Structures are given as C-alpha cells and as structure tokens.
Image (tube, rainbow, N blue to C red; front, top):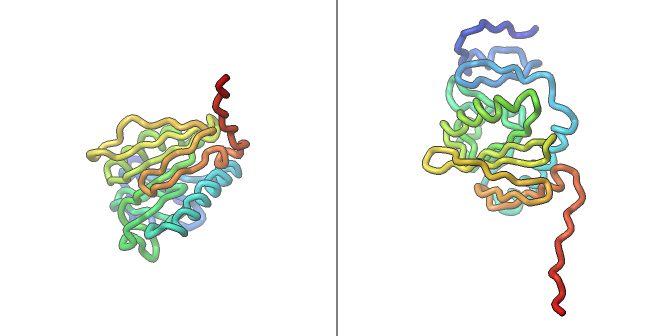
Length: 195
C-alpha cells in the first residue's frame, strides 16, 4: 500500500522505517522525497562501472567499504539518504540496517528529475554533515563535478570531462571516465618529432 504523506509534516527516521518496503524514499530536512520510479538502465550501468572501479581499488588498498543504493544513510533523525555510490572508512558507522553518520565519499548519478535536488538539497545536507568528497555524474552531458569539503564548506566544483580521469582524493585513486560513459579510450597525443 502506498504511503500517504501530509504536506508540511516534518518526518523522522522513525516514521521512515514504518513505511512499506516497495517504495523508496529519502528524507532531507524532514521532507520526504519519493525515489520512484526506478532509475534507467543507463543510470544503473554508470553506477556499476563506478562501483566496480571503486571495488577494485578498495579490494587492493582498503580499510574502507563501498556501498550503493538502496542502502540507507542516516545522517540524523530528519536526514536519511540513499546515495547511488558511497564509501565509509569508519567501520563503526556500519550497522545492521543502515549506515549512521556521514560517508567519506558520495557519488550521485544525476538524472533530469533529480538534478535540482542533487545540486541543491543533497549538496547542502552532505556539506552540513561533513561528507569529505561529493561527486555528481551527468550522463547526458558526459562530465562530472567534484566538490571537496574544506573548512566545513564545498568550494567551486572541479569539472572533469568524459575523456579524462577524475582523482578521487578521499580514496587516493583515479576513475577513468571514458569507461564510465562507455566511450573509447582517448588516444594519447604523441610528442612532435624534432627535425
């Protein structure tokens, strides 16, 4: 049975966990956001390609653990999110039902219906709760934006195009964006020969 929400109500995690499991929700500032319908196949392919590169890195170098939606991240009683891909390095935050506290890295694959929320509400809540690195992936435009937390604030984003690698500072790794966007690897320019 679908959840019926009252406009203007500030919901909590206790409300959230009583809602039926067939629907996906996030709470940001107590406001409930419906996460249905399910993401597109392209969105999910991008999530898998990013998660795969992170998994390979963490398997070889890691004290951290990677997750993907629909895993709940409980930031506080009014803020519960399900990032597309995220990494937690403090294992004490990993519970049976949810992650409690801010992940170190959050990656959101942006769709036209989530862009405003991902850029505004989610960015603000991730900044407030101390997510060290926030990456937005834009499938339609084939680039990413990366925000790093410095002195409690996100500065201007670094923009990285599909034919480059993005440095994931929190993990000390690079993600090849041409693989993420299913492009052919860019050819490296050869130095010009001297005469």
